[in-house]
Length: 233
Image 1 (tube, helix red, strand yellow):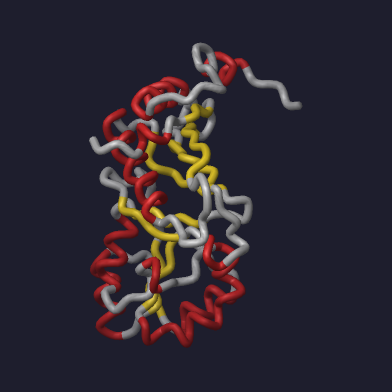
Image 2 (tube, one colour):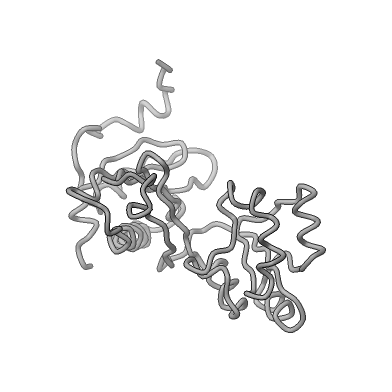
């Protein structure tokens, strides 16, 4: 078992790793423990009572965080003509059609979000083996296949977070930065948890959200009392 470094050991002082902590107190503790020399990402992890191998137990969606993520997101858009110009005007970093497909096939993956106008899906579909494993494949359910490419670009740039449960039922996402205020982080975490709750699949039985925790990139994790995260502010 790896040894805990002095910095992390100090960060864990005063934290009961087995206790369930109200969201506001958990955020306060995680912010206090984020002492790295860079602006750490604040992350939320949830253990769900699902088996994503079954079609009726998959959890996937998107949520707009009220205070954004604090992260610069590079967006690629597959579009032609006026739609391409709209995407550029909205702030897309990379815009193209067949030329962009060829770049991606050649290994260019310098983006974190991929959006496509509906007429481009015949082209984008040829990139399934490249984009799919990286969760970059445009999807109508996530709003990334849309005729309103400008709105999709603005949403991606403005703090929209995509989520998808892994095969073991764990779902996680970055919900802000350590430099955010406690209030901003609480609002973002609450929005994220409520989005997961709303995305409960029809096949989920018993306890849906089993456990939750919040942590910073280099800091300690704190278990969240999920009931407090679902409260209306």
